[in-house]
Image (cartoon, rainbow, N blue to C red; front, side):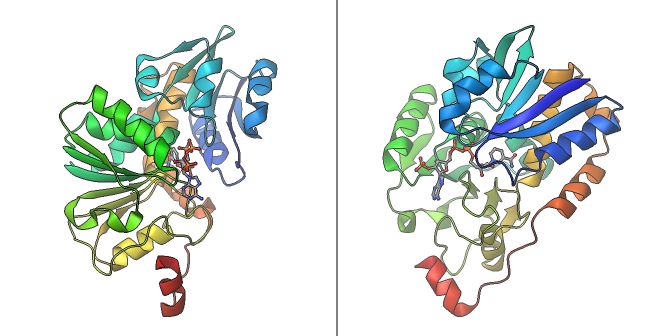
Length: 292
Ligand code: NAP
């Protein structure tokens, strides 16, 4: 019996237990995957007292801070500076990052190769997204984060590692070059089980823009709903959730062939049923409020 889980705070919205439970069952593996609410101040104690876990995922707000408590890091996790997957290797905690691959695969599956991107957020998930984009064809990346200093620090770090692409930071969401990019990524939790918009959107968006929300609950967030209404193409976070989960399971189960045994569409349908219902379209009065 393999014991797995996810740590984070908040964690009640997570679909990871249902997803991993379903995949383990499909593979005929006896195991459990539980959600653990772990507050920032409880992280160290959790790691010391839950050595029965063979592996676990890491989500908001621990992806960066956990690096300091792990015994080893994969090359990718060290480069990105964030961990979303931990393997307990005979008592040694080893950190990996599967968000990077998980983020790119849905883009690749749709033949999207963005060249200019805006990234909202500067936390653990945003780090993985930024590295994924800068290792691909992206030539210009603009970061925007609620706390500007965190975005500035990340931009500096990225520019050192990737000297060619132009990396900039916007300090006002209204100044974001939305008409000049082909990808907008939300890597903040804004929109999770709420109808909040992470940034105000202009009345029209280009059909060449893809709005990609990492938030997957609801599957079609307010950002996606509004971006689509304004003419952009959209991509929700459920596909990334599935791909990063499968990459984590490959590590824990040491089964690189695992995807051949899984029916992707069945997993995706099951998660869509479990996710929160879509937000309602905004009334004109509420829309003005949301954009103001
Ligand atoms: P994190 O490391 O804690 O970073 C959170 C980021 O969001 C920070 O940049 C933070 O800004 C910003 N933020 C938080 N609350 C905000 C608010 N109310 N308004 C504006 N900005 C806010 O978290 P994370 O691990 O990167 O996760 C971010 C989100 O991505 C979560 O919702 C997570 O579920 C989602 N995610 C989804 C997938 C997937 O597979 N679909 C994978 C990874 C992550 P400050 O710096 O100002 O605090």
